Image (cartoon, rainbow, N blue to C red; front, side):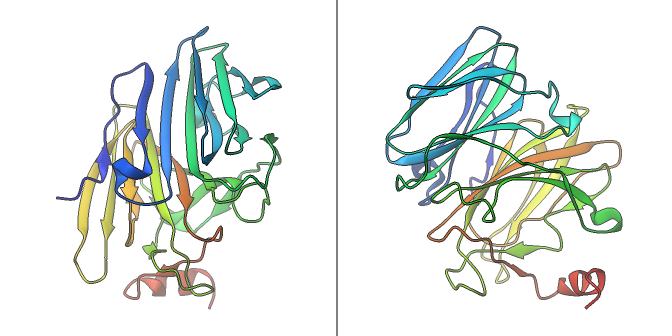
Length: 268
């Protein structure tokens, strides 16, 4: 069985520390901190750029000698308020001091030093899909925002009983403009938190086919293949996506067996 489902390590401090090496791939890294008010986290970026996502709570964030002050508005991720996010380039250092209990996602990928540290702004909620495929997106740092060398970051709210990352799609070939190679992580949350969701990661040839029950706080790795997920009735699902590859563009192809759903819903 592929090691795609990663459980949090404890409940405080750095509970996820997924590196490109530990994921057995080349680009994406993801860390997650749970901090109590007054606690701090700090890291040196090295050769990697970072986007810090204040999933919930408030913190004072700085990059090198730039102090961005106290950031964060939502105390629960399921408020659907746009998150506070900070970009830190490679060869820098960042620090976060929690001013309330908070959860901070640390999204990383190879950096080239082309962009300065900044607070990421103009994050708006976008509706996508139809019927029980409806979900709501905060495109934090997708390609239309020219703010990063490699990172693509977004967060998604999937209502109870709905599907997401669906119809199944893949982005595992470096074949632009038809497709781009992007590794991806999903950091999942459930509301209420005792819930569960499902995610399947599978290739069309059957070489990889894993279906996982995800709990609140789990991370799923998507090294290749299709990767739809669903939330049972009664439980809302959130996930934070980190993607990166050799090109900072998101081009995917739907599974040929299920593309008819996309064609129907898009009016083609």
